[in-house]
Amino acid sequence: MGFALSDMKLTSSAFDHGGSIPARHTGEGADVSPALSWSGAPDGAACFALICHDPDAPLVSPGNYGFVHWVLYGIPASVSQLAEGTGDYTQGVNNFGNNGYGGPMPPEGHGPHHYFFWLLALDSEPELESGLAMWDLLEKIEPKVIAMNRLVGTYERS
Image (cartoon, rainbow, N blue to C red):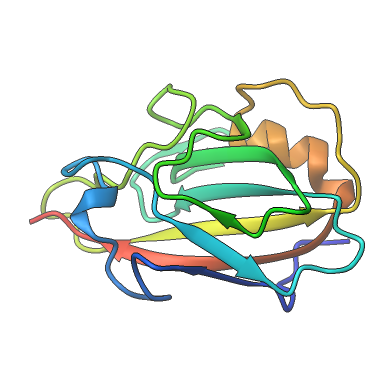
């Protein structure tokens, strides 16, 4: 399956789709991941992966663009929500060079950035080592993705 949007719905109690991400969830605040929940996963889902990516970041390198803020995987199919600041499941490496969540921190005066929280449902649970970067994870799971959707938040520094 290619990466096409599905009927899954990803939401957050911290912000609405298209809304501003509260400072608490950014590098200017407590820098904790927002609470997330989802519904509408397909019956064949065995596990989930989650990625937060900022395509507005002015970073381009060979085979890469934007800025990755969070890579999380190994989320069991029985789970349909993540608590604020979760450290559960398998944390991948973000573009800050850390495992886990690193909140929005766009350059000052750069305007609003869009943060795509992507939820991917997989039809089987692959054996994956911890600390994978976004592109490495996507390469390994792409054939197993059966559904995906996203929640988009914005953040701007003045």
